[in-house]
Length: 405
Image (tube, rainbow, N blue to C red):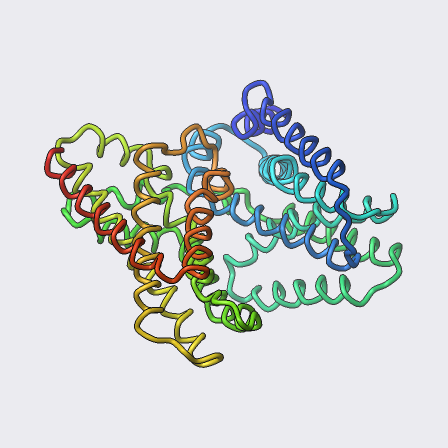
C-alpha cells in the first residue's frame, strides 16, 4: 500500500486533486451534451471496442513515458517485493488512465445513447481489461518469441467484440483475458517497468554538438511513440483524399492540410524538456537560434505529410496543380510558426507524464486556426495570396526579433 500511495500521489497529486478535476470535467461534459439533447445510434461493439482500444492506447503511452524514469529511479532504490511492485505499478497506471482519460470518453458515450446497466458494466470491464492487457503486452514485447502470442491475443479480443452477441458470454471472455493478464504480470520481473534513462537523459550528449536539427532528430528517434504518431498521420494523409474527394462541387482539399497539422508530439518538444526550455530562455541568443530551426523542423514534417496527401489526392481524384502545392506549403509554414510561438509564449508546465501533454486542450488551438484558414481558402481562393502575405510578414518580423534577441 505504501508503494501504491506513493505512485498515486505522484500522478494524481498530493491530495488527489486530479481526481476531482477529472470528475468535474466528466460532469460538465455530461450536462453540456444532455442539455443539447444530442442522440446518436451506436452499436455495442463500437462502444466496447472504444473502451478497450482507447484505454489500452493510453496505458501504453503511460508505460512508455520517459517521465517515468525519474519516478522509477527512486522507487526501485527501496526494498520491495517483486509481485507487490508489479501490481502497484499496474494498478496505479490503470487508475490514472481510467480516471483522467477513459472516464471522459465513456461519459460522452453514456450521454449520447441509452445503455443498459449490463452494457455499462461490461464497458467498464473492457476498459480495465484494456489497461491490463496493455501492461501484459508491454512485458511480452520485450521478448520476441512472445510476439505471436500478443497478435493472437489481440485478434481474439477483436473477434469477440464483433462476433460474440451474448453479453454474459462476452463478459466471461473479457474477464478471462483480464485474469490471464494478471497471471502474466505476476510472473514477470518488476524491473521490466524500470527505465533507467529517460529520453531527456539520452539526448543530453547531443546538446553540445551545436546542431539543433540533430538534437530534434535524436529526440524523435529516442521517443518512438512520437514517430509512431507521425507514421499514423501518414496513413491518414493517404486515406483523406478518399473521404474528402466525396464532396463534389466543394473545394475541400485545403481542409486535409489543416487536419494533418494535428501532430501534437512534434509541436510540444519544448514543453517535453523543461531543462531545454530553461536553457533557451537563459542563454543569450539561444532562443532565436533554436526557435528558427524548430520552426523549420516542424515545417519539414508538415510538408512531408502534405506531400503524401497530395500524392494520394492526385492518384485518387486528380487535379493537383501549382496552386494546391502553394497552399500546402503556406499552411505547413503557418502551422509551424504558430506552433513555435505557442510553445515559446505559453509552454505547458506541471505535467506528470507525456500523456498530459498529448491530450492538453492547447493542442487544438493551431489546428482550429488552420481549419478556419483552410475553409476561408475553400470559399474565397483569393485568400491564398492574403495568407502568403501574412506568412511573409511573419517570417520577416520573426527574423527582426531574432536579430534583436
